[in-house]
Image (cartoon, rainbow, N blue to C red; front, side, top):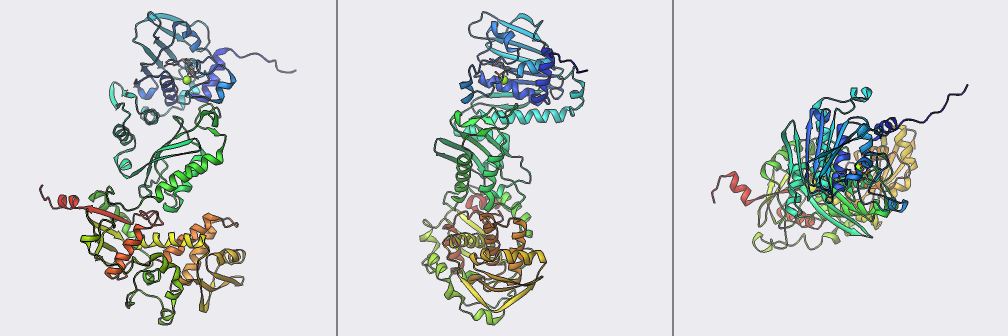
Length: 617
Ligand code: ADP
Ligand code: MG
């Protein structure tokens, strides 16, 4: 016999709906705060007890709820925010589903107290989500609304069991509040736990108070290292802060993205941002950002998910490209400028002590490529790190370097003194070299320290990308082709990727199941270790895993080649060579970071130095 169908009672319907949107105390806080924002509040006070399990109380000074609507607020699918289907097409409020209050009331002991402009006095209502037997009592309340939620999930033991320790639940609540605080700079928000003040955000809509709030939520170092961006095109507007790649994080924990004032976590957006950082961030690291995208509401569907964390863009390609371009360009624009805010002494020192090891550990092949890449020619100093034979040194590599010379010509020969030239030269002029690793230079502001390998790597990489674009990579046949033993998989890749290799100025052929032969390499890599170079490229291609060898694979490989083609630590440079490097840095996009996202230079201002020496002013 068939099982009989019966209609669910309203409380159960609401409890089922609660199952979707109310996962834990923080979800209640999110829904209630969104209602307060939709009501135009300028101040919100939040009191929490026992991580929100015992009490969540949110009081706002918004427009309130009319007396006669209080009952409706507690019924399902009742909302003041949409009326007809068309409204759904252009939602400007955070809520619109009319589900939150009835859902919450069905799984907790809830009380709403509200006073609107037109009512004589405030009223309170309590209800249990059954839509009947709600109790209305007169109350006293200034204009606005207070919602109290006690004993969340008292009647849903299965849910209650899954709640975590008070501290954990409270941290989730704090996260929600931080996001809301970032989404509306103009609003005062106070958060108390057991009567103790936890956060206390002051509203303000000028640049200073915005930066202050971002610092309160994301920490000062983020704001200090962030690039402020503002981009508009095709009806889209993107503003906010993106951290310089050197501020990357090991977790994706400092990423806030708002679409029309609503926090979202969206794959398309995350992808666009990752792409924008691709070139300048070590893989496995995560960018940090606080970004606000504004677009006409009809171009985005916020009704994609009950929690409204996800959105759908009508023109997803356009949005993706817009975000990518805005961030990519902002990062590329970072060049040394006279007024560059400088890293603090301690920050720089800490950073370098951490990074020096991995930057200079490992291979120390001196490739003498400063001159090959167009820096001032100087007598080739015998270099104890060189792994190249004299015969290969004798080859006319420089003659192949017309394009590099063109790019750098002029700057290399100019010798100016620090006194007269620093206006046009933000990075100033070289003083000397420190332990074969850093270049010291002086500019107007003070001392500049440059990691010469990191800087040169970025210069080389950007040039290589430009040359690749214009098909100007010059190949140089090896006098004696080199055969290399590789795995079968690597040999297969070589066989599949003949054209790819040609495009990057290399000729590599398969000789046997596990042997390949290198016949030519890009001219300025002539002196590099061809075996190591090819092996590195092959591991890039294996890591890329895509036999189409798209732009990503190409950039990956170009970055590897740039690394092989860049001046190594412990290579002695002359002062003109150093100055030439500085001039090239000033002209190079994305010069702030090497290809692995390490910083390339830092400044110690006279002030910083005075502080070090306790020089009073
Ligand atoms: P939604 O936000 O999707 O409309 P809710 O269940 O969250 O649904 O709220 C129902 C209605 O109650 C809202 O449409 C709004 O009219 C009213 N409301 C809820 N909270 C507040 C508040 N803090 N201030 C003013 N009105 C509120
Ligand atoms: Mg709501």
